[in-house]
Amino acid sequence: MFWNNKEAKHKLVVIGDSLSQGFNNGGIYRTDVNFPSFLHRCIEPTPDFDQPSFTAQAGIPLNLEVLVRGMSEEFGDEITWNEYLPAATHMLKTLKRIKKYWEGGLKDLAVERSSPYHNQSVWGFNISDSWVVNEQNSRHHIQTNPERFTVFDMLPEHAKFTTARLVLNPSLKKDNELETRSQFDNAKVLADDGGIENLIVCLGHNNMIAAITDLKMIWTEDDNLEVFPGKRTHTVYRPEHFEIQYRKLAEKVSKLDAKRVFVPTLPYVTIPPVCRGVNSDLSSKRLGYFDYYTRFWIWDEDFDPEKHPHLTKDQAIQLDLTMDEYNKIIREVADEYGWTVVPMAKNVAGLARRRLGGELVRDLPKGLADALLKQESTAHLVDEDGDIKLSTDFIRLDKNGQLYKGGIFSLDGLHPTTIGYGLMANVYLKTMAKAGVKFQHSIDWDEVVREDTLVSNPPKLLAELRYVLRFLAMGNQEKFLNFGKNILGQAMDLVSPRQKE
View 1 (cartoon, rainbow, N blue to C red):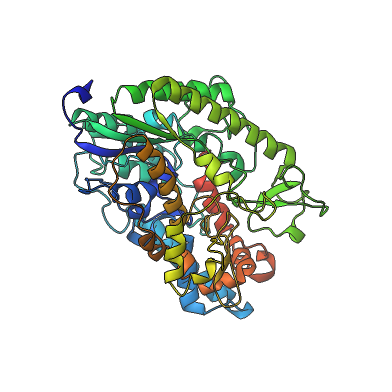
View 2: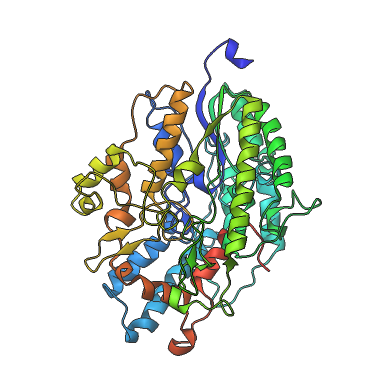
């Protein structure tokens, strides 16, 4: 083994999906505040940790915080009835510019770089995508699947594949070995160039998440386990299929000969508020589940199971039981290969306030409480006992524009806020330290809170959350302006690992 001779050159390498890339608010934007970035800054001297930047045009495909903040600056604390048309025009102009940029219409997106990034994460990737997808076949998919364009489809339709190209082969050069490298191929280049000390493999979430983003349960079959993501139709892997994929993953990880390997357990997909639990008959929840799960922009009193897409309580329970099987497989494989398991599932479940009947069972770091207290705009999020009032609810603001509910999940309802990524980093840090990783610093919670503008300085329009979500979803389009396709629906379409019909 490499480790009998010298220390590894690359202290931290990541193969992963949206959670390790830092996706939030509907797009990949600030990769410098994802959980691996917080971790690498705890090591001294700070090692190299290269990753692509997506800050141009506020990220790809859509950063809802930036969009709503821009509308707040333009229209104030609320959008009145007579402002719907100008607000819609403003939004479309912004989305059109974002779309044009990420489709290469404003500048060349290529970056002169030949060595792989340390962070090989790409949002939307499931397990097999880590060896199936490369820049070449991503480019081919974009070129051979023209957009189904209408004036109302204003998001970059091939955003995931554009992101994959920029991560896997940032120079975008053709006819060279870079264009056919997968995540694992790039990691192998780093392994051969001095070795990898700590490898985080953050994959598996997208083997089920489409069931929630699509609100459909379509199980894998034996012959479609490694379908290219642009051709995928299933939304959830059967446990036996998940195990096939995860064991193939393990074989590829072992060939990288990393000193330490860290893999997370996968949280229940029914916890993030991307789908809203509703009880149509107002009955009390049983077993911590709701009668139905629908879109987060549909309020309880508006929900109609005959009209709105949804999952049932039984389906939600089935998904969670399936996730239990996934996590059992992860722990078994990790034990066989000597990997360290990061208990993310347990930590997220302990923050699910609605499911737990209003109580949290997971303590949050005191350093976070101290950082929240230092800022006037966040001090109210810590009570007199020092307990932090953040939860997995969808974000809600009071009449003064301050957050009073949520704060862990961002505006897409699926991915963490910056504070949420800080909490992830904290779980990883504690687990990795026990496994022998030498950290010289703890998480810089002052930095985490300062960078989380959604929590510390939320757009004022979010105080009228119901109306903002209704506007973005165009739920009353026939009354207002026959505006076109649901912007939130488009965002869910793109985030979903499944090809939309």
